[in-house]
Amino acid sequence: MSQDIQQNLSDVRQQIAAAADKAGRREEEISLVAVSKTHAAEQIEAALEAGQRVFGENRVQEAQSKFPALKTSWPGLELHLIGPLQTNKVKEAVGLFDVIQTLDRPKLAQALAREMQRSGSRPDCFIQVNTGEETQKSGIAPADIEAFLNLTRDDLGLPVVGLMCIPPIDENPALHFAFLNELARRSRLAQLSMGMSADYEQAVRLGATAVRVGSAIFGSRPAVSPS
Ligand SMILES: *Cc1c(COP(=O)(O)O)cnc(C)c1O
Image (cartoon, rainbow, N blue to C red; front, side, top):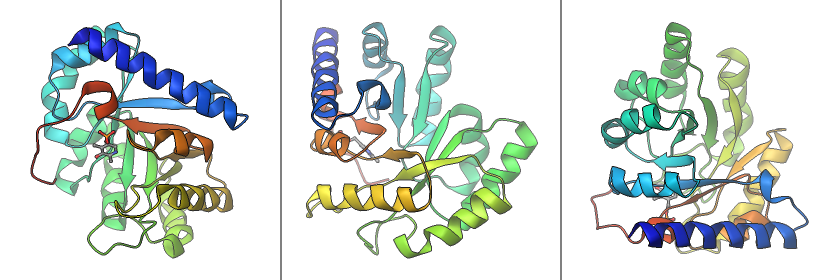
């Protein structure tokens, strides 16, 4: 099992390097976020032993049960929240995560600003953009990004570093990646979190600075209820 994880990580890193090379980009511009949701601490340890340091989790509670101990043993570990954040979990999230990729509504922005002020911890934030304008999906509509940036970055002083998207499952992801890239360029945001196991190479070619890869590293997940 741990050998599989090592091999998978090495394969994914190689694919990222090849895609970067094709696009005339440097491999170091792209951060590989290993998505470890549903996987046990032992599997995360295997990835850490293979040199992986950046991880993504989609639920605060699950991350809280696995990562404080891992962070103590591996001081360079960087943890990203990639799932929806409820305002009653903001305190825990700000204490645990180094990056919050799912800033998606004004009420959450206000709660984050208050908690960052109170605690002094300031995790970098990505604005989640609903590029497909799907009603059931969270995220800021593309047309509302400028106003949301005014609120979050300028009024509340949140450390907003980039944009993140999860394309609709039934559409060509490349169109959404190119669109997110254009939106970030217009807003002068440097970072782009896009691409998962099935499409991270395309995302790298279209400018991703962070790809979120789970099953291609850790294997398939047991089916779980949607978060
Ligand atoms: C689970 C998840 C991923 C990783 O998905 P894989 O297809 O396993 O690579 C990426 N991003 C988000 C937001 C996720 O919830």
